[in-house]
Amino acid sequence: MPAANAQTLIGMGAYLLTMIAIGLWYARRSNSNPEEYFLGKRGLGPWVAAMSAEASDMSGWLLMGLPGVAYFTGLGEAFWTALGLFIGTWVNWAIVAKRLRSYSQIADNAITLPDFFSKRFHDKRRILTAIAALIIIVFFSIYASSQFVAFGKLFGYVFGAENYFTAMVILGAVLVTLYTLLGGFLAESTTDLIQGFLMIGALLLVMIFGFVHAGGFDAIAENLADFPRFLDIFGIAVPDTSEGVQKVVSGVPLFGPGANYGFLAIVSTMAWGLGYFGMPQVLLRFMAIKKTSMVRFSRNIAVVWCFLSMFAAIVIGLVGRAYLPALLTSAGTAETIFIHLSTRFFPPLLAGIVVSGILAASMSSSDSYMLIASSAVSNDIVKGIIKKDADEALVMWIARIAMLAVTVFGVILALSGNESIFRIVSYAWAGFGAAFGPLMLFSLFWKRTTFPAAVAGMVSGGAMVVIWKQGIARLGGVFAIYELLPAFVISCVVIFAVSLVTRKPSPEIEKEFEAAKTTEF
Image (cartoon, rainbow, N blue to C red; front, side, top):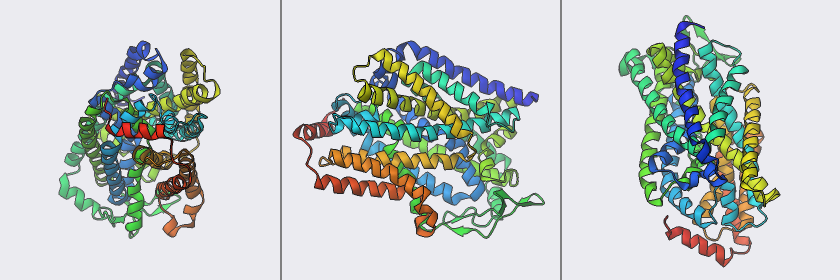
């Protein structure tokens, strides 16, 4: 291994050891009981709640997927995606966070999202729990695989290993599983706080140095002006490719004339923001914040972090294309632009710390995915349905076994050959957004929502994501939109319609609903 790469690895290693040490620190406390392990006994302060929600939400997609899209096809898709996510972040914190924090405690102290849905509708047979748990297991396995791909790309670059979809992916999975197994939710949330600061610091640092090295705003704009529609938010650059690889002539990447990014494409892309209402890793932080009075301060932190980080990520992609125009010639390799810029701008040891921002992004998300998926198996399926008298020790052991199983499945998916982090994340995001998002909004804000409607809405939303993605979208034209949008709308319609034709909720459910509107903890 070259000496420079070795120094980079040392910087990354120091960061990894710090994260594992935090896991060890919280191990004894977090393993005391399931509520402590899965929700930290609702003890998150405003900074930890905000930063852990955003860090676990954004994932390696923020430092690799989003800059990669901006680098490969220009500003259009990246801009509208980021705008949708920013609006979704603000609205989610503004209207969902406080109500969910109160309602989850009023609903018999629900500690997971499936648990909340069942207790909200007094689902004694735990049908909602079972459906929600299965959706979580499937889509979080897909989500985890995207983070293992990010690990592979990063470690593969540092080690100079082309075949990173073997040892490199497995190494990353083992490291994140280790500290999550040890420390549970508190370790995960505390490391997410650190990782959130590292992520935004790394993004801003690379963005600033990128501007300097690329010659400033005028030089960057002049270089990118040669690529049709590259800086047009109502257009999209179209790389001239052969078998997925962009053609390069005399060091200049070739582009087609570009394409319009019309109204339907913009609405479809901004629909990413709808996903927030159903994201378990974010909603769980709302449930875990210490006091409802802290929500507003947490929201301000989260919104500022979200804006700055996505702005920097997009700029990095654009600067990267201006500075290294022909280096990365496929959508998959374009997602390494952050790594290439970091290693060019900074000394190896410092570069190792900066690119640890990718580790931070991937670890802060994959630990959440694995912990929530394991809680779905142990607390929601085993404890909630199969063996209701299971003691706390058994639940904890099942959680660990389930976490290992999800990790293995995620690694298998990562090795399947799909190297685009952006595309993997978009599918899982749509699954959660459509299955849980409409039901969450109706559960919190419409008293007339019924149990049959909840089941129908959850199933129809999740199923429509798969049906649209695998079938309808292939018809092209107006049907080639992001699957989250039609699935979300259909789920809302189903919940509303079924609620109107089924028996109204019981007085007990209505009483809890009214209490959640006014009660603060």
